[in-house]
Image 1 (cartoon, rainbow, N blue to C red):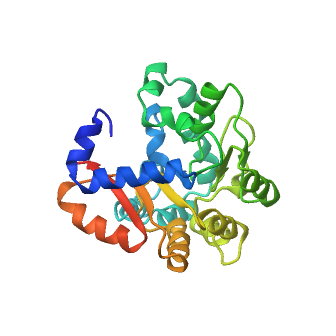
Image 2: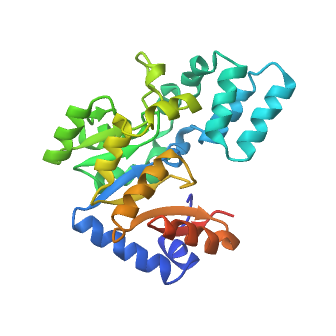
Image 3: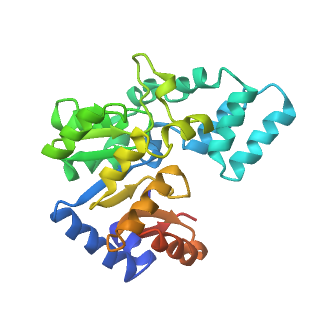
Length: 280
């Protein structure tokens, strides 16, 4: 959304955007809004979106035909399949991944970029309760530390008891769905990146699906920095929405003008109402 004013965003889709914004405010005031952060919130300090990360990793593949096969998957938006092929064609792929999510990028990010990023105000807007992210990086941890002067608690799907405690008492907690990459040791087996990892972590009845279902139930989600394309996380949300058809979820979503009607119809069927902005 770089450089867009509030009025420019509202006027991109007059009426609809403003009504949705007012609904978000009501949900926030009632305490029933759960923020869900995606990779788009980390690009301001040099991190790439999922497709960009896959593209850079694919450059390591030696065989030209295999490399092109992965590129084709990425261009088609089949990111999970692309990551699985990458692992097959370049076995050290997961060892290279932490280099692309290096904390050095965050440390080198100028203060003015942080201040003018969309993510900068999140610690002020959401000071209690769960914050959910699929990001590996530690941008959110850094921003919360700058505002509150103390580290935000981080939990993973493997820590079900801790997560249950945070849910029950409403304390601040960052739920990192797909793992964590920082300067300390990275547990590559705990990441959710390849097809095999998605199949394992998102299996029916598994810890991640159970926790996501509990988090989504009776809550309105606000997706920020997310593409909201079809993926495993959205499939879980779709199932919850079917069981609770009266609950709508919100997003701030970049979109080309001629794609707005199609995207609105798709997301509305999944229980979502986005604020659109011009991403031409």
